[in-house]
Image (cartoon, rainbow over all chains, first blue to last red; front, side, top):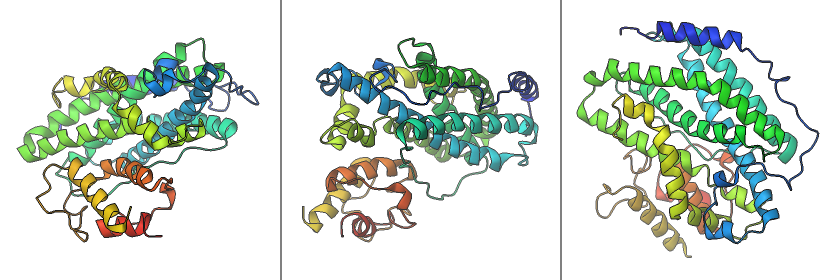
Amino acid sequence: MTFDLADTVRKLSASSRRNYQNPYESIEWPDEVDRAEWFTTPEFVSLHGTPAWDGLPDERRRELSFWEAVNFFSLNIHGEKRLMEGLAHRLYQPGLEGVAEYLHHFLDEENKHSIWFGTFCNRYAGKVYPDRQVDFPREYADGEEDFLFFAQVSIFEEIVDRYNLTMGRDESLVPVVRQINANHHAEESRHLVFGRRIVDWLWREWVDTWSPEVVAGIRAHLDAYVTATWREYYNPDVYRDAGFADPWATAREAWDHPATRAHRAAITKFGLRPLVEAGVVSP
Amino acid sequence: MTGAEERDALRAWIRAHNPDVPPGEPADDTPIIERRYLTSLQVADLLLYIEEVRQAPVDPRRLKAGVFKSIDAIHATFFAS
C-alpha cells in the first residue's frame, strides 16, 4: 500500500498535543441538575414534530429532554467503546503503521470523551442505557474490514457532531450539557478530518482489488449501518423513563413520522458527505 | 399470541427486512445468521420488535451466544418462559 496520510497525521498529532486536556478538569460538574431545565435542544429531541411531542406540556418536554441527553451520551459511550476497541486493534497493524502516532491520540481523546459521558449519566441519571447492538463474526475480503471500520466511524462521528455543534452553542441548555457538547465538538473536529482522509485513502487503495459483489456488499452494509445508528436515537428506555405508557409504540411511531424522517435525512446528508466525496456512495 | 403466532411474527419480521429470503424460508430451525437472513446491524431493530411483541424490555447485557441463530432459538430465549 502507498501511504499518503503522513502530513495529516503530523498536523493532527501536533494539534492534539497542543490541545491536550485533563478530562477531570475540563468540565465543571454541578452536584445535581434541575430536570425542569432543558438538556437537549428541542428540535433534536427524538419526538420533535410528532403528535406525541405536540401533546406534551412544557415541563414534560423538559423532563424528556433530560432522558434524551442520557441516551445521547449513552449511545456515544457504546459507539466510542467499539471505536476504541477497533483503534486499539489497529495500532501498529501492518499497512497502518504510518497512522499509529495519531491513533494513540485518537484513543486517548475518545477515552476522555467517554469519561465525560459516563460521568453525566451516572451522576445525574444513575445509569447508562444498555447497548442493543450485537456483533456476529463474518468473513471479509482483504482490506474490507478496515475500510468498513473507518467508514462506520466516520458516519457515526459526523452524525454525532451535528448534535454537538448545535447543543454546544444552545444557550437554553444547562451549562454542563452545553460544555460537554462544545468540548466534544472541538476534539471531534480533528477526528472528522482524520476519518475523511483515511476513508478516502483506504477506498482508493482497495476498491480496484474488490469484486463487484464485495463493493455492493460494502454499500449495502453502510446503508444498514446508517439505519442502525439512527435507531439508537429512538430508544424506548427513554420514553419509559419519561413516563410514556407504551414506549415501544412511541418509538415506532416517532421513527415512522415524516418530521423525524426529514430530520434524519437532513443530518444523514452531512454524515455521508465524506463517503460521497470519496465516491463510496451516491449523494 | 400463541407460540405459533409468535414464531410467525418473527418469521414475518425476518422476511420484511430481507426481501431476498426465498419463499417458505426461514423455517423454525433455519440457521438465519449463517444464511445472512439476519445481520448484526439488524439485531437492535429486532430486539425492539421482540420487546414490543412481548411488551417487556430485554436486557441486552445478559444475552448469550447463539440466541439469534434460528427462529427456534429466538423464541426459546425471549418468549418461551
